[in-house]
Structure formats: C-alpha cells, structure tokens
Length: 136
Image (cartoon, rainbow, N blue to C red):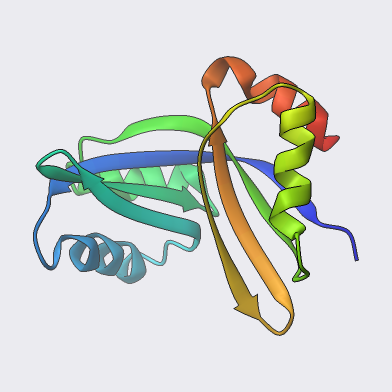
C-alpha cells in the first residue's frame, strides 16, 4: 500500500508553559466537536506552542475565535500516513533531500495495526516544491 501524503493547513497558539494548558485547549476542541488530524506541543522559550491540524479548518477557526485565542495561521504542512515499515520516513525525507528542500520540523509515530503517521513542515517558500516532490 502506498503512503498517502497530503498538504494540510495548520494553526498554532502560544500559551503559558505550565501543566494543564494543552489539556485545556484539547478539551475545548473536543467539547466543540472539532476533530484533529494531528497535534503537537512543545516549549518555545518560556512559553509553549500548540500546533493543530484540524480536519475542518473553518470550524476550528470559529471555535478558536469564540475562545479568543491569538491564533496564527493557516500555515501549510504535510500529513503522511502509510503502512509501517523500516525506513518509511527515510523514504519521505529522501524525496525532499533529492529536491534540495530542508525540513523545518517533523513528528512521526507508529500508529499500531502496522500503520504510521507523520507531520512535517518546510519553509513557506518550499511548500509548492515539496508538494511537487510528493506528487501532489
């Protein structure tokens, strides 16, 4: 089975870097019925950045607006899903390396049932070239 790679919109908010901030944001989205394709959170200086890839960007933005989040985006990223195998992500990264595109950040996980998923980001100026390298 071939990997499925798609370009996605992602958004982020900066928040305090303290226990419960991620849960608060995710619970708000859950309670509003917002489905996420991916989520990533990490420290950013003395704060934290929460990245969201929503299944429905318009609905996500509406909830973020009601919550008065200082939302950044949409920005572009790539969501990759496929059959788990040794070197799966190396193949993906190799396609970008061959096109001389630097990956800004990536997260990948084994999803169980012999599946994996990954999200990756490139610089905005490289999004079109990356999409072309991926054949999308």
